[in-house]
Image (cartoon, rainbow, N blue to C red; front, side, top):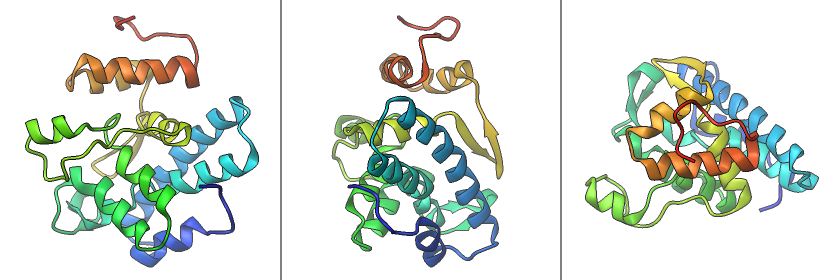
Length: 194
């Protein structure tokens, strides 16, 4: 999983035309997530190879949106947006980037369980897609602070992140807040569940 000389921008550009709307959004959002995730990794004192992996994987975590039907993001594929993590994982696995692929697969929401996938009838393989490694958790955490709302790259407050997760259940909020205590600091949002 350690980072090496792999160029994540070259990988992105092999799937997505440079200077296109989709490229600008995927790269811009990836840079936002990368910068926050790398800051967390450095605060935690992770070694340089793990920080490099986090930087690479954060830049590529949303590569699968290119295959989704999300025209507001410049993506004209056929898949629902919820499939972007799984599709990105498949794209990167085909390139021999298994660790990076795992980040794609596990970053949606705060991770999905096989049970949720079945109960919600999501068009995904019915398997657990939860961030396991520290690297996966850091990138998933950092990703929650940034949105691609109608093609605009926005940063969310801690309260905004929690409000967005709350509609999916208190367990999602609790998982994120556990990461926040570990990665982001002790401050809790207003009305949070301890």
